[in-house]
Length: 159
Image 1 (tube, rainbow, N blue to C red):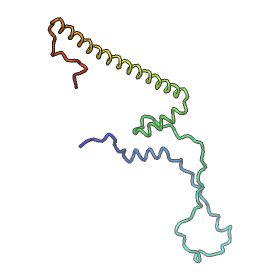
Image 2 (image 1 turned 90 degrees about the horizontal axis):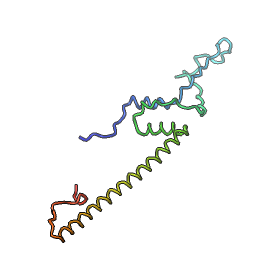
Image 3 (image 1 turned 90 degrees about the vertical axis):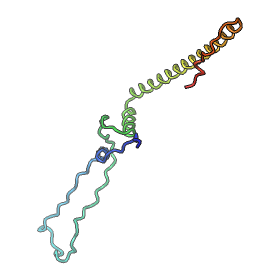
Image 4 (image 1 turned 45 degrees about the vertical axis):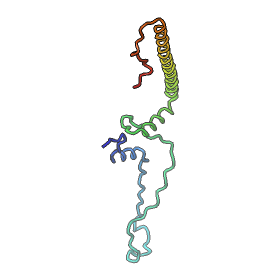
């Protein structure tokens, strides 16, 4: 059975992640009934329909505030999307780090170009060696020399 590279997170870690993004709970407003002695009773309790549960007024939705969520501990990040989101948020606020990363990307691209040019130069050099060997073999044949036919060109040998 082949193992999958992606492992499903357990329920506890999912709930912990969701709890980190949940808005803080709103304080409950309790309504106290005024004392019965101060208000005249218009109806007696026996004429009122029984209430199954006391009804509370709807809680107003919280107004959007520009509060920042608590910083995420990088050691707790276990998935690529959450790590990428954390890095993006952190770097977007730090211009010095952003410019440093741009510099690193530019340097990496320069190194890749240098490595590619070095590779191409090595391939050309090996091709020239093969051509030089063929020319040497032709000269040896022309003067009656012994040519080693078992030598193979390293470029022509397959994997």
